[in-house]
Each structure stands twice: as C-alpha cells, then as structure tokens.
Image (cartoon, rainbow, N blue to C red):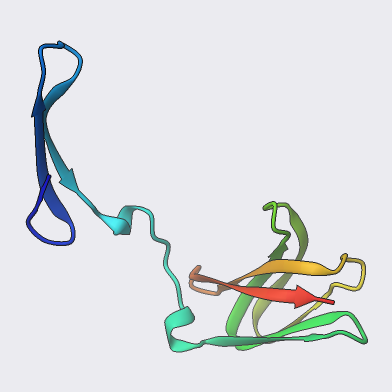
Length: 117
C-alpha cells in the first residue's frame, strides 16, 4: 500500500483467483463519522455532588443532558430550555463510570465521563 498523505493511499494485489486481488483506492474521511461538537471551547462543566446524588452541568444554552452507562443504555435524561445550569438526580444509579452527553440549543453535542462512587 502506498500512502500519499494521512488520508489517501493506493494498494494493489493480483492473484489467479477471480475474487481476490485488484486495485484499491483508500480515502479516509473522518468527517463522515463526526458529529458537531462544542467541547473544544470548553463550553460546559459538570460536577457530581456525591452526598446529594445530583449532577450539575453548567454551560451556555444547554438543551439536554443525557446519561448513559458503559453498555450504552440511557439511564437518565433532563431536558432544559436554553439553560445555563441543569441538575440531574443520579442518586438511584449504581456506582460506576457513566457517559454524560450534553446538547446545546444549536444541536451540537459533547460527551464527558463521570465517575459515581
């Protein structure tokens, strides 16, 4: 395989088989797998109060906070109307690692990990 740069390459391989071999062109385009995100500018912060069992997410124009366990199951969600602070009760969740997905009013999302003890 020959790579022209980080996203383009060519490969070839010929055999006597009619189903193997040929010439392939590889083009990596990560934008097909990407979603709009706003985490690069640190647009929100999250703090978990272990005593009260409340996760507080602060930021600009927060529309939704959704919490997933490590198996991808949604375990909690809180909608908001362009709020700068959203509280989600997580006292009923077991101890462990959770993914917190925050969506702003423009539909951009960002995800962080939160540990509940």
